Length: 316
Figure 1 (cartoon, rainbow, N blue to C red):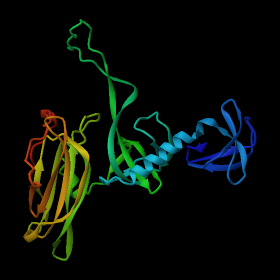
Figure 2 (cartoon, rainbow, N blue to C red):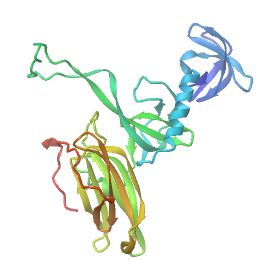
Figure 3 (tube, rainbow, N blue to C red):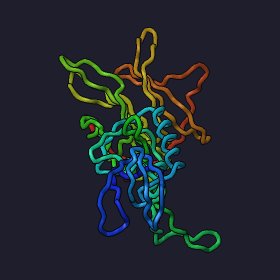
Figure 4 (cartoon, one colour):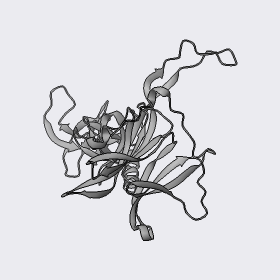
């Protein structure tokens, strides 16, 4: 089996008073020699033997799932970098009660890769007092509370699902201040432009409403370009009410006379429920759609944003 906590001591006996005979760390493989109630006597590859609580161990199946997930995470494009607010578990699947081996330490950096939702254990959304009864005459049943989880990569051999509220996305303050009550879920540097003796990055950001459990990953994108004359960021492009799905991909392509330009691709759900990929190019400060031969503009599925969630346009 494998150790699932950052560090734990091996005991010489199962008793209130014991001597520490060694330590094991997260991910260490141990051989089970004996079991006694909630304890197991193990042997490490180095030959150390001792007792530890069985709840600190996971089996080969869980370890293999984590290895598979880590290999899959290595192929995913990062959607931004985040910082862990405190020590938090890297789960094998979205959910507080799912298995884990590794952890992120407080202040650790991780690349954000994907989003999913899971039910919060023991929590249900309150039923409105004026809720209508169903056709069968039964009252509306409470719905489970959904929480957001992020799939993150904390290193070449560390990946897993983390409760979203345990992470802070490292969005530069210069553009984070323009979130207008929305939550930024992804950000990308498209390119850099010269301003005197320094360079300024130009950004693409994806935003969503400030609540968890939504069916889409983002419902708005904005491109911020740098105005070299006024030395400030300005909104070059904004698209709202999207049914957007991660990942977003960025890159550079050659457009002939226009030169090599930054591009980005959005995955949005269409009116027919199918997922479409739409490409855009940035020829500062203009953002335009890039249609492949034979492609029609088409319509994406629109998401109704509650009035309380929509913010007034700010001048910047």
